[in-house]
Image 1 (cartoon, rainbow, N blue to C red):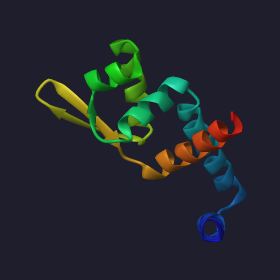
Image 2 (image 1 turned 90 degrees about the horizontal axis):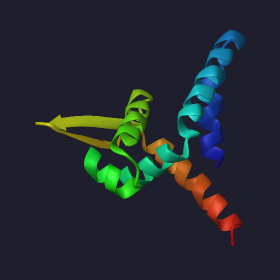
Image 3 (image 1 turned 90 degrees about the vertical axis):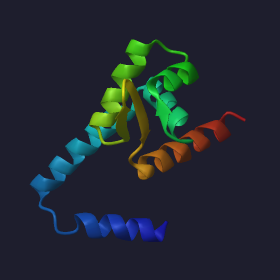
Length: 114
C-alpha cells in the first residue's frame, strides 16, 4: 500500500491546480465508463482471456447490440483491446490495473454481503 501511495504522490507532485482539475475530470470520466453494471459483467467475462463478441454475448446473457455498445465504450476508454480476424471481432484486457481495481472492489462488496 505504501508503494502505491508513493507512486501516486510522485505522479501528481509537480502538477498545477489547473492540471489537477483536468486529472480529476478524466478520472471522473473513467469511473463513469465503469459505472455501468453491464460493462463490469463484460470485463468479468473477458478477464479470463480473449473472447469473441458472440462469446461475450453468451457469457453476459445480453443482446448483441447492447454488448457491442458496451464493448465499444470499454475499447474507447482504453480498458479493452480489439482484434479483428475475418468477420470475427475479439476483445481482451488492455488495462490490468483497471481489472485489479474492479476485482478488489467486487471482493470488498461480496465480502460485505456475508
